[in-house]
Amino acid sequence: MAKKIRIVDLSLEIKEGLGKVPLEKLDPEQRKFWQGLADVLTAKVRHFGHKESVPVMLRSFPGVPAEALPDGLAWADDYLTLSVHAGTHMDAPWHYHPTSEGKRAKTIDEFPLAWGYSDGMVLDMTHKKRGELITVADVQAALAKIDYQLKPLDIVLIRTDTDKLWDTMQYWIDYAGMGREATIWLIDQGVKVVGTDAPGWDRPFRDQVAEYKKTQDKTVIWEGHYAGIEREYYQMEKLANLDQLPAHGFKVCCFPVKILKASAAWIRPVAIIEG
Image 1 (cartoon, rainbow, N blue to C red):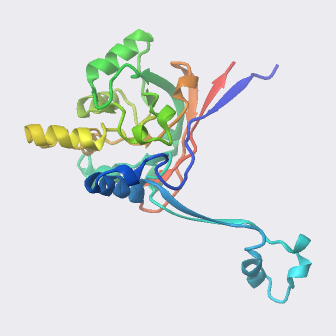
Image 2 (image 1 turned 120 degrees about the horizontal axis):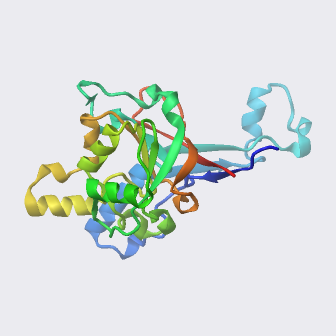
Image 3 (image 1 turned 135 degrees about the vertical axis):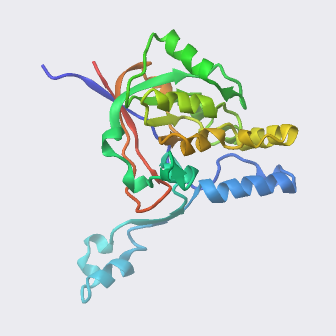
């Protein structure tokens, strides 16, 4: 008898804009921040319909008239201008720094394929408040709660449920993030790929900035990412639907698009659950 499997889509769509962010109601400084975020993290999309594409298609078939096409219609096509960090994506060590573990950091095309299909597990961090740092103690407590011991090449997914805020202003500013020590601790257990359903692995930018201005401690800036200078790892951001997964006992498939020498690439990760 064939095994029943359930496949859960762990990705968000690539789309234009930041969603319901009321730029017109913000003061100039806030508007500048949000517009900068939009320029970096969202896409510009142009869709070409079947009629609009007729001249383009006929250039590939010289001498063929439009009447030769079914209903006089050509192919649909779409053009995107976007960062590799837009939408659900995977960061390579090269994104964090030129070096990792004392060697040239790997780019996304150098992702070891054996790391992209492995046992997955979810660490529930939904109790953490927005802007809070996820610590080693938090990670260890979450593991103890589900009676799970990490093993090499486990794919660790951090659940914050921030994806439920997708298409709102809060999505970009209301989430907890991983700290340096917690990230390094995971990698030291043999983990090579991690992911979060928040927009970033670290805390929101504004919380990092506020703490730096208060303490002048430069180690609070992008500390989860910068952990990749000391330990090699790949991370996924803007995941979704982690609430639909068991704590463990499933596979994750997450292969990035192969963009030569890039710092990141888009992915369509899925969880595969048997039974």
